[in-house]
Length: 535
Image 1 (cartoon, rainbow, N blue to C red):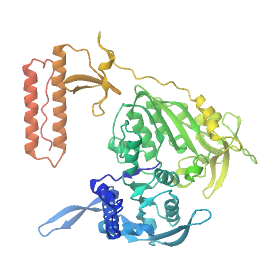
Image 2 (tube, helix red, strand yellow):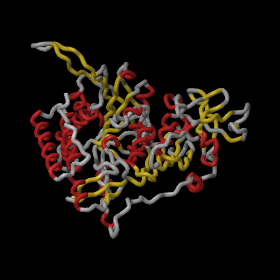
Image 3 (spheres, rainbow, N blue to C red):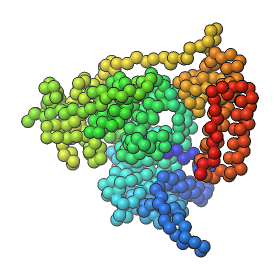
Image 4 (cartoon, rainbow, N blue to C red):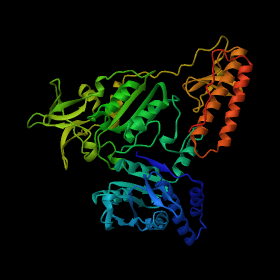
């Protein structure tokens, strides 16, 4: 799935509660829909780029922020989507309005267009599609397909209530479209799994480094990046960002098993694969036929399931699976000849545009990952060429008469890996294992923390009481207090909104902690660097 942005603002939740009441009047219902749309618009436009411009105030010239040339359009799906337009325009009054009308064929239940009027420059506008309810996803996905056919490139879908099936279908058919929705789905999951710790939020807002045993999912796909300060320098697209961050979230020995587009494995540029290989061992990969998601999402795409096991530490290596090889197509034949000369069936994908540009096509054939050339048994279908609007491409067609579930059952046997139980640090003599507690994700791995007045040491997903005598324990407590105070001081100094008086108070607290630490003669070999106010 692509990015689903949960709108969990208290005002939105309050107003959703009002529209769900059976005694809410029609007038109040319409007003609430408009107000919810306005609040959602505020959140949905949070990442619009800004630029500095110089203006002249009544007193002097100064520099202010303005939207960086972004033109917007609001396109409601008739008729229900009209109720959200007024609220959107309250926030972005300069936006142009388009309309899309759809009805369901009474026999096939497929959406049919009956009206479509869009701004003539829709291709250059950031488009916000509105529809209060996302149920099966049929109408919404059809509307977005129409927009793309008219040239729209950057599209967001905004709804108030959504079903998990509708969200899944939207992301499968339009993986580049963000869905903005209220937190109902997350609350349902919390009710279904009350003992689980479920976080409703974007992946970029969470960080439990070295914590989990397993990360599993169907990652978003798109040609855009996620704004996550710790990973921005990688310049990874969203699907590859999910791999990179998930590897950091699992503990050493933990496993990441993700469904993704074939382009993670087949892209011409091996940068992402080399990054992953340095940090994880490839246990195996399974290439799915292009109809794997057709029944529940209506999408025909070639996808891979990739299994990675995190290393204890990064290694400077580039194993063979980080590279691609050419499968050649003999004349007048649909058999492919691998680089080693063995005849294999072919494999091409009906995905074009930006995705297709990521993989190499030559006169000799198609570039696919070396792993699948060396392990054709992990490709669950016939690798064949297909003609598309962008030329010949690679796909994996299903094998008639075979059930995908049976094929997966057989292929998983070739995933070579062993699950490793989390190893705890060595315990002191006579210390019982039950003194360990679940790791606090806010505590850095392989460091000390104070919990309920006791010293703990974190290693991966557990924290244990180390074997320390009274003097050593007091020393650790003092050092932890100094470390935490220094970090708090740095955070305050980095925040331009914090007044100098607050920073001065924190500096005084740091001095008091250090004086107390020194008085107990813990300072042998330790010096405190004075942290001055940042200019």
